[in-house]
Length: 351
Ligand SMILES: [Zn+2]
Ligand SMILES: [Zn+2]
Image 1 (cartoon, protein in one colour):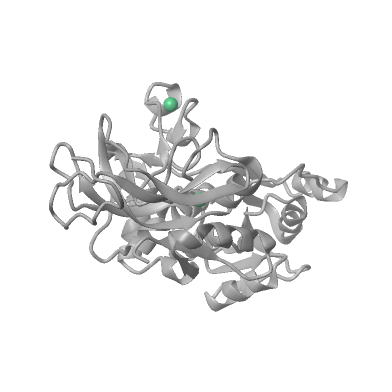
Image 2 (cartoon, rainbow, N blue to C red):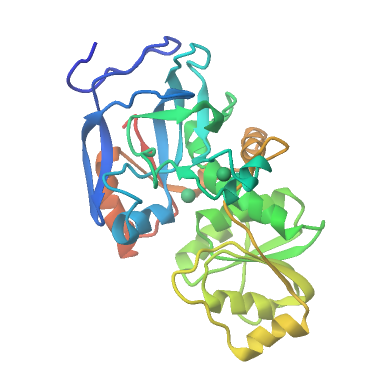
């Protein structure tokens, strides 16, 4: 039966397919994000219907919405979300609370066969290549569900993505116990990385950033603040994609240190000859990291959920704003203005 108007919230435990229309933030073109009513999605092969409870706003969403666009229009953005399964055509998962790994692998390429899904040559993606979490219901592949235990909230579930990216960077660093680590970029992913570095045995974690308000939050979370000229770091994570920030790290780390490159560049990245030469003289190791691992024997997402559940990863402390879906377009504009301070902005569909 198809009814018009907003679907009523399905009751917990009942396996009822939501029908009719739902609220969604739809990107119709670059800079054209509209909150409107669209049809509830039909679950396809291997899919269940998830009621999205929370969806975080990522820095990459701001770029997609205002400057770069999504792969096609219209698309519902949002790739950092959690909710509960309200309809499973097989009747098994209904009521399951879950975060969602946003990458849909092709399962055919060499990387997929090795379960290195982040390097899939032909992937799909919730919130950029296909509809994502800034809506009430989404049809999600069973493969992508990450079940949340009772002690983990939907907010925390919606922050699994930046936390899993931070864990991937931390693993890439090959942390040895008791090291002093410097991280450039105190945004949500950088701070998640800092939490992981601490949880995995770093003695001290320092942050650098050009925004004093970000450093203030880093300080409140118990991290050290880097000042130009500080040195003697054992390793570092570059989370900004800016050459100046990378140069600071190259100067601040000692000989034979490692630097993990995590930040996405906004343009060309250049280094002064002396900074470049320091890589050579110090025999530094620079390595990249991308997205997160969702392999069966190396699942960053499962590790994030476990670390949130046992209190090692206080992700909720990164949330500075909670908004309704209706407030999303104006909030995106405010974030881009950079006047007000935002760390993690969370869309709460119960508002
Ligand atoms: Zn993200
Ligand atoms: Zn693939």
